[in-house]
Length: 281
Image 1 (cartoon, one colour):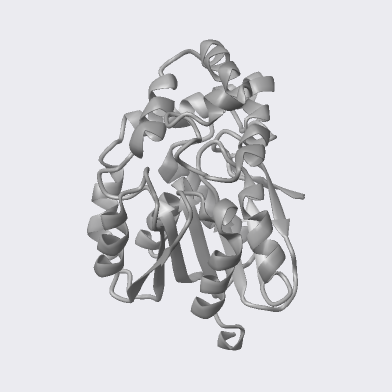
Image 2: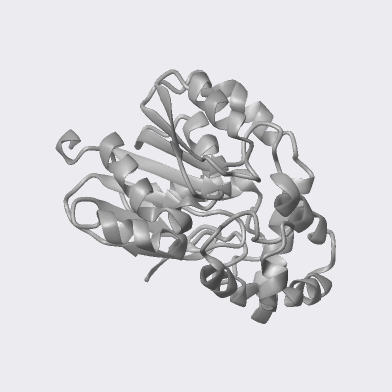
């Protein structure tokens, strides 16, 4: 992992390097860049794969006390990240909350992003999404210290596998979810950052409805990938997003919950290859 100092604070990222098409991969709440490890392993021979660990609850470095950790603030951090690395002709992909960030970035008109991939993500009025998102945002009303005590129960696998935790997000990724929880369980500063983000979500639940109104003007190739068995992100939202985006198309992936990069990394990598051919650059 490499660390870059951005305006909000230090951000770790993985960068495979190379001269292939650039893929920037965004994760969701309470996750880190390792969400994409298996997808990157599949694609890195032909693509430059870059995955930042954003300040969304599983980051290892605390942000500055005055950093804007709302989702729009984190989206601006993504734009700053692209700018600082001087990335161009980017395919920007996001899963779960990472897909919400992709929507915010492309709706803002960043011309560094030439293709977008939305993978089973928050959209429209499903924000925060499902039982999982609502329970997490509700817990963010607690002071950081009490939030940390609440999250301690996630050390228990049976609790992590509940529908209000990670149980409906991934079929196969429990080891990853246990790892993602370590920063918020062990670092008071990360708990502080996470509570700030969760409270901002609670205060702006209509944000993605407003963002959706701008997506019809995003005239660039857009791929919407949805888990056929998703129980957190409504399947109709996938077709709705694909229909709203002028160059949108929908692909469904079987035998997966929301976190497709964990449950079906090979299938997802294959879809991304088809959407972003190496010869395109």
